[in-house]
Image (cartoon, rainbow, N blue to C red):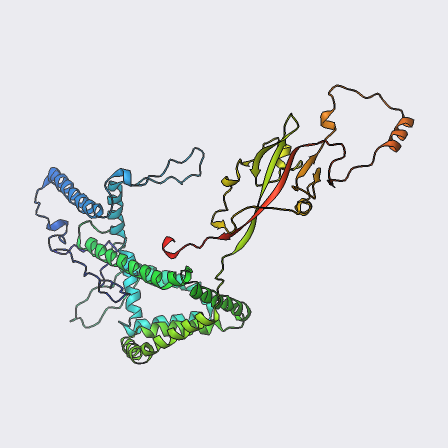
Length: 494
């Protein structure tokens, strides 16, 4: 007794073939045993009544759980400590973001539910393969005719899903609801199909297949083959693309970059004049015709006789072009880095070494305005090169052009020392030393004019040489420079 269910839409086509890209033959999938293919009606349990049905249901569920859990236990670690768990979402987060953490029981249930409903995908996949492989030439030619109409007139594309809905779903469902009248071959007059009258058959519904049935194991068979197809396709793309695009061979990847860049420029200019309708039409016909068995035999013969002998020659030409025309910078990039030595004036009037900082800590810097202390290290030896770089020189060199880096940063309120140790001092701020609470007498309008006339001229934003009165600000700094070069990371360390 076959466990055919008219209400279930399942995979009843031929097994979907497994794609092989590297030439190796994959292990042949094992077909379910006869005992495993028995339907529910073929189980040896013959108990009757409510208690017998409950016992049979429990035993069936137990067998299903054991089967799927043994399958998942081969690929999933059973230790919960090895399974990453998602952190609970914070309060007020976006709705619908929370997902259940991994659980073997939930995984088993979801796999059974998924496998019972995946048959429609395999049916569609099998029909596409059947059309492209010319199993029925009339179907393939009909597909090419529809494809030709759509390519020549793309405005018909929105009509295609509507037509599929009408002819492929609604019409068959109506015919199943209103079947033709039965008649014997001995009838003198055949009764034609008539859609009139009340429905004569129940409506077709889509239901998942029964678990542990033949259709359930057919879906498992095609699911395992589809996983192998994806693995083969994934590995083939990785072998083809990654070595040529990850710059492990910089000359080859650079040549590919140049070719793609030129292709982008050409397409930006010429894409609006290309006959895209004819191009897609020709590609569709070529791809579909290549699936014909006779053409496949001709292509295989042509590849063995003509294309394969020329592959080495073409590969050698490309390698010679890459080696001669693609020039790479062999020397690593070199840049100059800087560090500022900061010193602070003590209460005794002596300059104390303070810190080596990445910023000059000038009077108008953000750190000074915010009242923060400079950030850095106390010793020269603790200054490290940037990440991914290494020192190109053994020692730091003092920047003798202190005036230039002050002007480049537009630093104000400092005094530049152009000789000697090239310190850049803060200008002494007289307002900071005024006593708090001293109130100046009010001035009359006439006295304001005199004071304005006697006001000293404004000092420049920076000065050169020594300060005349010997008073300077709290901080001074000077700039040290050193060359760094990029690290050459070996291939094995990547």
